[in-house]
Image 1: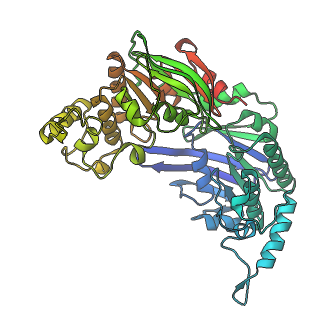
Image 2: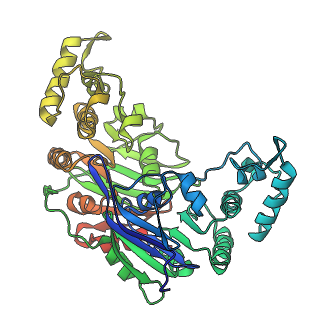
Length: 494
């Protein structure tokens, strides 16, 4: 594969506070399956979004079929034959298969849409993919695998010359994956290369020809899949040292504070059992879709479990809801702070005191003076940078918004804190401050469950690390066995 169809060189892209891509590169040859591999946040999807016109790079060049290109929007990319199928399928459920395949490109004659032509061409495209779905069927009636084939048919209708597939098997059963792989091999045989983004090592070795590994927005290297090993690829993915600025405070764990036994939800989470002790941090690792967030929502009572129980400080919570969990001393710092963690149009003081209203009220009436005093203590303690307690929280920086959420749960004197990606989207300085706060909390005996996609964060802070894969708990590693390679081995099972 010496002649490249696609050459991306020196691609750079910066978002506010984040260097998403730094001198990234990629070469793809005609007719190959080129796997793009990396941890969450490595830059894979960003690089593909640059290629397919979803976002514009700050620097770098793209060459396609021997000439320079610079797609400004997805339509530009599609005209060139660059088509991306996202993990979240972009179909209109209420329209037919044929209407989705031709969406925005309907053939007309005399101002009228030629439905018969759409149906005939769609049937031919689907037949080419080994799919016998009726083009008149509504997409909402199809399985996920069939919907994916409809997306591919749409790409073929656009005469795709290169196809990007982002985690295409995330929602597919084993037999559906085999069908998809057959379609991919057929496309490659016709000369259409596929860029295949996946975390699943088994798939990579089954379908891939070459693999490019990305880490921290940079290209680490490209290897032939044949002749590579899982260990080598994992080392390329995680080969960085743990950041020295992550302080770990050594605290002797006490008695169990949070006990989870057989907690499960059909189709979402297989039974999980573990406990967290007073003054301990249990890290939770896993790739996107592993079930980490679903598990913590079941613990908190935000979603209903089908089986299992949760005990806090020796008392079982028989009817878990967010209210009963909070009353038992459990706090939940959600992954999406803006939509689930904050009331953006309320001021700082009211966001901080949301879980402490009983404490700052008298006879059911809110004491405004005590509210301000209560909030000011937390602003000072967490060094929240705000113009005043009355500043609307949406106007704060991401790091200060996160500290407002933290302040709320600290003020509520929680004995268990469930943290889902507590440092996502904030700058390095704010991260260090949050690490210090977490250290103070464990010294005070708080038990912490810490979900994080940042490996250095998990390894630097956690006493033990639980690793999840596709809704199942694969194992819990003691601190002496916690390494990036060992975590990724468990996270990539299957």
